[in-house]
Length: 218
Length: 181
Image (tube, each protein chain N blue to C red):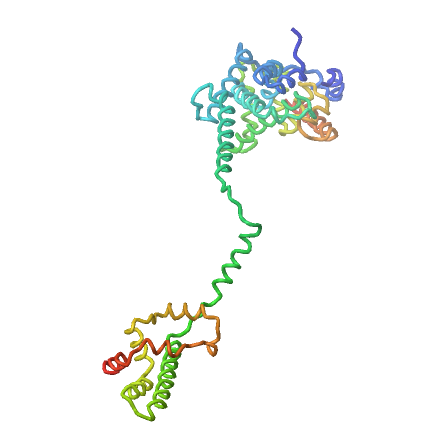
């Protein structure tokens, strides 16, 4: 704060101004400053109320708020712990899940060995025909070129189409389903050329009567 | 009981005794601030509105007060800004021009119950109202509130040199007004 003398000395050059009493001529209502503080305080209260029109449920709300929040945080932690205890206790080999997709894909891509039923039947037909031919030759040799009825049947069978032979085999109780043929082939590691077909055994399944009946049917 | 210091008031604010600190602040400065405002806006009713807004702002912004300025110059800054804003607002809402607003202020002075055209102090008030806003504020702060130029510099955020020039121009205009009336 400046010294009053400094203020007046500054104004020495202003003859009229420097002679005027340095006081403010205004008046204020009686007791104004006594009530001013209360008025301002009331305005601040009103303004604060305007700022926030909401009210807390009760005066204790904020005192208990921190504890309530902490309680919620703790229960949340417990929930997390419970979730952890629910984890699967079993384990898998290292890298199992990394390699699993490749393993599965490898297996999926590997084609099943499927053999057509027609190819299988050709084998049966060939075997049957070869067996019959051998049998006829032997009989012819034994019977000195006597042509029997069975010989005629076998000649006729040899000329049969594969489908007809298939029907015949099925009628005789042989399993000719695709699954069965595939299974048989899949379990036979031998090459087709090494397939050891027992002609006598095969022929023994068919009697002369049966062949005759069959030929009469078709 | 000795007057509480600004440092003690600020300490009370910092310690969380906001209402007590505010009470001490108002009791200490309300009259000084009131007269500062009154000399700018003239009428008591207007001064009453402005001082209430001033202390409400003080309450709202006391947390932002920085100790790099004096508490009372900070109060004067808010009061000055509020007073000049009040007059500015009146100019904007008034249908009359700036000169007429100044005329209104002069009329307010002559409308005061105790106004006496023969008394020099009333003539001085009429002369002060002829000054531009900034010069009026500088003159009042120096002449009536006896502030140093450094303190006025804090209040008006103006250099000391510019304030000295402003004060000199204001005193010169006032002298001319007094001589011609």
